[in-house]
Image (cartoon, rainbow, N blue to C red):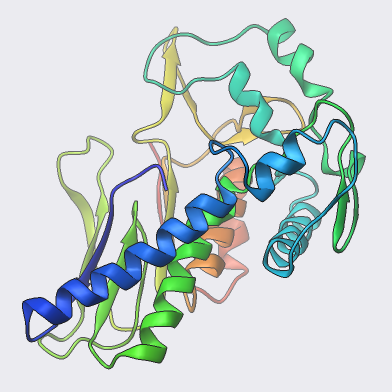
Length: 276
């Protein structure tokens, strides 16, 4: 998942806690092994190395591609799973290494979901194009784990993959699970939230950014321009029934730039937005 992952549980014994941890880890590794673009031999690698050939995918991958296509449409192309190739120009490591417009232009021709041919279960990408499900994979993994726990145990649990999290239900030993929204300075929490059900997801630039000539470039890139979204919020956290839903809304809001709050005000979910 490219981040710390944990499960908090109200187990009565170390054996129960270890068993729950094994279940969570097993499903997390399954999703990682299947969907990571960093690993060879999985379905994502087969798609990305197909050289323009059509690839038939399994049902789970097809459902995720359908979801990605829906997000592409809802965002008018701002959410695009083919935009991962822009990492060749952008490395958000806190430095001042901002790429040139020419560097970005040389890559942009490989970006654009509309160039793909998708008719489930077959996907065909033009030569050189790739997909990256990182924008939805972690939240999907959280939801998969939570559903598995809900079906197999009554022990209250909180599953947290890199700050995207969900709970199996009300805790028994406290009024609510206490979750902190990380501050911009990374030295504490801006806000504490009591979570009894559902999920939280956060999108922000506290850890992944560049800064040059007084301008801060967050890691959320508009694939239509190849540049980070201008005037994006520093952090957006959304509460929803599922982590996938919360993550979708947080990401779509980040892509709105100055219009993030207006977009979220039009939804029914609770949110927290930090500017600067």
